[in-house]
Image (cartoon, rainbow, N blue to C red; front, top):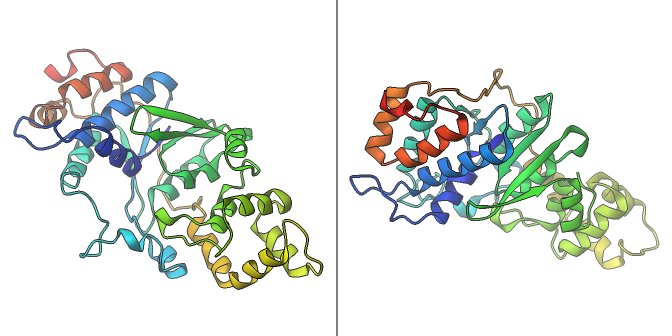
Length: 306
């Protein structure tokens, strides 16, 4: 099980009230929501390995170089990612909790969590569940390899299982074609404009007919007599968007070959540092959430009392 950590703690922050606080009154809603969601996922899906995948770089230079608009609307005045004031201090707390609990946390300089997930999923020798609220990761679904997405549809409690059939049913495209569909349609949440004038319906028709972006562009280049879905209007839009179509695939495609160390991700049968975890639990009011996580991991009930 690969957790898209930033996606989950943002979801937790907005899904759990900020009135959930530590003993000294600081919000811990994102931390508690993240831990509670992880406990539910472990109980429901029983993975044998778990990795929290981290955004070491939320807006990598190689993507910005290809498409300067990539996530530009999320930039804060200091050049970082806009993050709610009540969330930012919770992220280091979550880092410390994961370390003390013994849950693997992996990031890579110059890459997003998506790329870490793509690389670990590609390396995996067995089935993989990717937990995320980011549709970009639908491109990883692979029924033959047992790779699916557990999509946090709303809040932190509503999980949708996404496999190739679900992608096809939702978008009308082949199950592994989400990246090419997204390039054509665009995604405003990532600053991805798409091909001007081509919406989801036309993008889906093109991908369904020609298989992938390369097939679409090849067909557009050789088409003399327009016909659906390559009508005269669509051909004009594809030709006008040529520079964008050259640049966008590197932005949308999840990297699958990031230079990562070997990651075991074995479930911790007891905390890596029980004393540190107990101290964090007391300082931040996390005993109930850590109790639920510990129960899901099979820890002794009194592990935080030792």
